[in-house]
Each structure stands twice: as structure tokens, then as C-alpha cells.
Image (cartoon, rainbow, N blue to C red):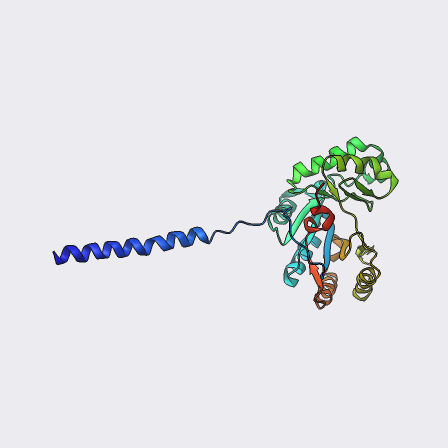
Amino acid sequence: MNRFIAISAIAILASCNSKPAANSDKDSVVAKPQPGSIIKLDSSKRYIYLTWDDSPQPPGTIACKAVFRKQGVKATFFAVGMNQVGPFKKRIIDSLRNDYPEFLMANHSFSHANINGRDNYSLFYKQADNAIQDFLKNEKELNVGVKIIRLPGNNAWVSNGKIQGPKSTLAVCKQLDSMGYKVIGWDIEWNQYKAAPKESVAQMLKKVHDKFESGYTYEQNALVILSHDRLFGKPQYADSLSKFIAELKKDPRNVFETIDHYPSVMSKK
């Protein structure tokens, strides 16, 4: 009898011990945030959107990702489908797509308006239907998860019927707007000079300061910075990027976000 009681007690204890472990495993599964999620922005903060164009462009794309990750900031890479040539570049694109919420991959067209071997922005936008198909092809080829586009070669903004940009892009912008796409331009650019960043860190910090202080940004308390992956492939230029971000982080008002959390992108009709 005593033996039966002892065995029963052991069985009950084992059963009790196993249940919390199963529940614990279930509770520990946290859903990964998906691109395009809605967040609440803090009006007391200044949001900075690092948007880098023409990905993948190794070694620049890899160097930029390393800097952003080391500094602990979010960034957006606008990718070009025709640049994804070979397995190495495909892995870079896969990493950009899969590394959300730290990084977001968005649409910068398949061809970058390349017609007959050179960028021909004028002809690209004149042929509006072809341009739209180019963006749709890029979305499909790269499996872009958000309906966010940057036009190649033009600073245009589109959101919910509001269009701002060069007249030459108007037909394309109207079509994209009717299809529910958001088009993102930029407030300031870290320009290129002979395949290197043109402005110094100090000059870029002044650009950021002046834009925020003047209030002349497309959206209040939101600053979109444009540059290109290829500019930061060399160690000395990657170091400049790291110093730039480190200085911006010293101001507690500054918050770095991906472009799917830009005010006009999150706004609904």
C-alpha cells in the first residue's frame, strides 16, 4: 500500500512539473514585428530617418549595416532590382528583408531609369506606364514587403492624394497614389564627390541642426536623410558615418526610425 502511494505521488509531481514548462515555452514565443506596423510618435522627439539608396552595393551596403548595428540605430535601404546580380548580392538583399525592425527594405525601382545603358530620367517618367511596371517588377523580384517607393533621380513625395515634386514625375506619382503607394523624398542629402561623401561630419551635423531649427522639413519633427550605400565602403568613410550618428545620438530628442514609421506613410485615407 505504501509503495502504491509513493509511486502515485511521484507520478503526480512529474505531471505538475511538466505543465509549467509547456506553458512557459508557449508564452515565450513573441511575434516578430512586421514592416508597415503603426506606432505612436512622441511629439517631444525629433525623428531621423536614415534612407540609403541603390542597394545592394557591396562593400558599402555591408559597411553601412555594420555601422548602423554598432550604433544601435534603425535605417532604410531603398533597393534596385538590377543591382541584385549573383548569389552574394542576393544574400545582401535577403538580409535587408529579414533584418526588420532594425532595417527596412523599400522600393527604388528595378532599372533605376536605366534606358539603353544609362540613367535617362526624362524618358523614364515620360513613359509613365512603363515606369509603373518597373516599380511593380522590382517589388516582385525583391519581394519588397511595403508599398513605399523612392523615385530614382527625383525628390518627390506622395501620400493620400497629396503630391509634391517635379512636374515631370506627376503622371507617375498620380498612378502610384491611386494604387495606394507612398513616395518618399528627402529633406537633406549627404552628397557624393568622386565616389566619397562630399560633406564632412561637421557639415552634415550643421545641415541636420539647421533643418530642425528652421522647421523646413516635409513633416514636423521628422527629418529624412538621403545618401547612398556605395559612399561608405572604405573604412575612413564608414568611420565618418559612425561619428555622424554618434554625435546625433548625444541629443536625447533624436530618435532613429525606419521609413514605414514616417508620419505620412502611417497616415490613412
